Image 1 (cartoon, rainbow over the protein chains, first blue to last red):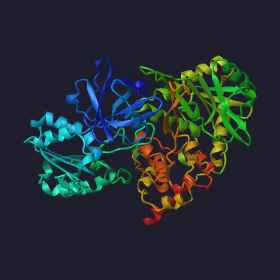
Image 2: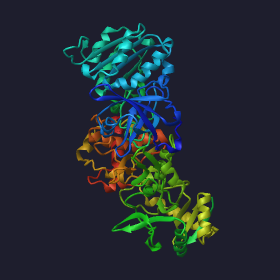
Image 3: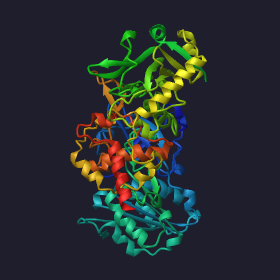
Length: 277
Length: 346
C-alpha cells in the first residue's frame, strides 16, 4: 500500500474476504485493499487495524508477500477490545488498515544460510510470513528447520500448513506441546526440549524466533548454547505500538521504538536491554 | 536578522492589531500563577510572568485533539480533521523555545506528523529573554537553555522603557512591520541591550555539578543505579511531571462514538509513561511493571534517549516537573546524585 507519509494516521478501508477459525481463541482474517492495491509488506512487518468506535491495534501480517494475490492475512487472538470486536466480524465487513510498518526480517541476509525457526504459540503468526517466503524461494537457502511449540494440542495454529511443512523432504519440522491430550501422540514438553533433536552448523545458521516473553529467555539460551552468533539471531517482539510511526512512545524499549527499530530486532542490538524481555 | 526597538506603550497596539488576523496567546495571570491562554483583552498579557503552569506546547500539541471523524453505517467512511488556526504565541521563555525545538524534531523526523506540523507551520513564536530566575526549581543555565539564537520569529528583551526586538525569520519581520510601530535599533539601544544581557548572567546560578555535555554518557552509566528503586518508593506515579513537561509528547488514541452508535470521532490525548498501563499489552504483559522502571524511563528519555534519537536533550531545565512534584523529585537532584555516585565510584 503506497502510504502517503503525510497522512500516516489515516486508515485505508479494507474488505474482509474470509474468516477462518483456527483455534478456540484465534481466527485467520483474509483482507483485501481497495482498487487492487497491494499491501507491499515484507515478512515480519505489522499493520494497525482500526475498528471505528472501538479503536486501533497493531497486528503482525501473517501472510507472505509472495503469496499475497492482492490480499493479506492476519492471525488474531481474541484478547483485547479491538481483537474481541474483530472476532465478531463476518465476511464483507470493512476494517481500517494503516501500514505496513516496522523493521522486517532481513531475508536477503539469510540467503545462502541454514534457517532455524523457533515459534512459540501465537509467535507462529509473524514467523509464518517469513517461513512461507523462505519456502517459496527454497533453493536460495540451506537447511530449513522449524521448531514449534504450543501449550496444548488445541492451540496449534495453521494445522494444514504444518502437515505440508512436515511432509516436505527439504524441511526439518519438529513440534511439541507443553501438556498433551488423550489423542496427542507427538512430543510433550516445552519448546526447548526440541533442541536436542537437531544438530546445526552454528556459524552457517540464522535463527528467527517469536513467542511469549518468557520463551525468549530459554530459547535464546539454547540458540546461543548451540553457538549461533548474536548477530544471526532475530526476534520479533510484541509491544503496545499505538501509533506505529515512532511518535506515541508506548512501544519504547529502552531507547528504541519497537514500531520503527523493530518489531524484528537482531539479538546483538538488544541483548543488554532490560526492557526487551 | 535585524534588531528593532518597540516602546512599551506600543506593545498593546501591536498585539491588538494582530488579534484580528491571528489567535493570539500569551501568559496571563491564573490565581497566583500564570498560564498561557488566548488573549481576550491585551491588558491580560503578562510578559513579566515568572513561569507558566503548562508550557506553550499545548498550542502545537493540544491536550486533546480530534484527528478524524467516521461513520460506522454500511460502508464506513473516515475523514481527516486538522484544526490549525493561524496563531501567535507571545512571551515564550527561552527554555520553552528549546522545548519546541525538540518537538519539531520528534514530529518531523521519520514519519512526519501532519497534525503537529500543520499547526507549527501556522504558528509564529515570539520569545522573551529571561532577566531573572523564575524560582529555585529552574536550572536553565546549566542546561544551556538560558540563551537562544534561533528558533523564534521575534525575540524580545526588556530594556526598561522599551523592548529590543530581534527578528528571527521573514515571517517575524513581516509581523513586526505590518502590525507594530517598532523602529530600527540605534547604537544607544544596542549598548543598553548589551548592558542588560551582561547584567543578567550572574543572577542565574549553575545547578548542575557537572557539564551538561556529560549528561547523556552519565545516564548511560546509571541504568542500574539504586536511586531508581529509592525514588520509586516515594514517587506517587501520578504522571504530573509528564503533563507539565515541555518535551513530553507521548499520546494515546481514543475513539468516541455518538449516542446513535454510528458517527464518531478519533481523538488523541497526552499520555504518561508514569502510568501503570502505559507499556501494557492486551495479553496482560507489562513491560515496565514497576514504578522504578517507569521513573527511570522518563529520566533516561530526558537525559539520554532523545539525545540519541534527535540530538537534543529532553530536559530544558524549566523546573516544571520539580515544581509540580508532590514528593519533591527534581531532575537536577537526580542528575547530581548520579554524578556523585560516578565520582565516588572512580
